Length: 300
Ligand code: UDP
Ligand code: MG
Image (cartoon, rainbow, N blue to C red):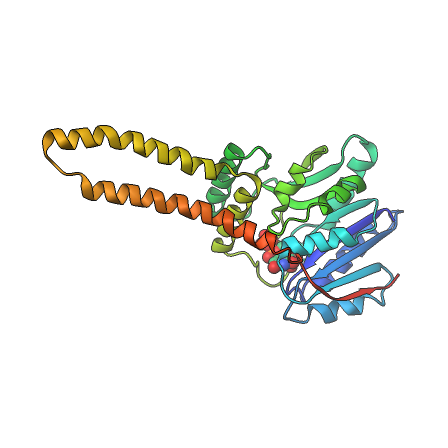
């Protein structure tokens, strides 16, 4: 098997057939065999039924259907674990990422044996200014405080060579942040620009708040430096408080109220950081599965 397409699907009933057709049309006339691994991430619409209809078609199809919604990260992992291809592509079901880009990725891998992964990044962003601002800020912060490189604008839309896939699926962390994982495992990644299309049907599942939460998860998954930051902050404030104490003694004025707020806020903030890591350790410690498969279907 030359290529596996891994497709996470959450409430994509209107897009699956279009996606399938776009893939078939794009790959027609190209002489390689491929499979499509659809992961139904607990869709509540007709996604699973639409997927099951594809099984009777000519293409090699696998359907991995979750018992509930576990999130795109879990769906990507399940897809990668079930992909048999020599090359494996992660691609969205909504046609924002067109399969024709996959052909460019494959060609890059074919002619450059030293490249292990071709990742697409958004040449130009089709989103509002607020979103762009926060995304840029996130990448600046995350690259500053972690040792793992995060490339701004890079998406999960990428094609891996088999050895890299095998390395990625070995990472069984519960709080998954793929862009970090893809970078953490190493190997050579080549970035190519692509244009993001409008969603064919349905809506994006990402709200601003969800993205913010995801960004925090990303930072916490790849660095423990904020923990140390709280220690340094504590030391800094103790040092600052000493001359302040002397001044208030000398002038007879009390700085008590502002000091209480200042120190209280710092302590709460530090405890919050501590809590974030503690909660993650707790959940990871329970060793729960990252996803649960309810049904698995394949036509090969
Ligand atoms: N997705 C998923 N589980 C989720 C949310 C999204 O499998 O909980 C899938 C979704 O069906 C799509 C891809 O992940 O194929 C990207 O989702 P979306 O289009 O909502 O994100 P955006 O393109 O807006 O970043
Ligand atoms: Mg999308």
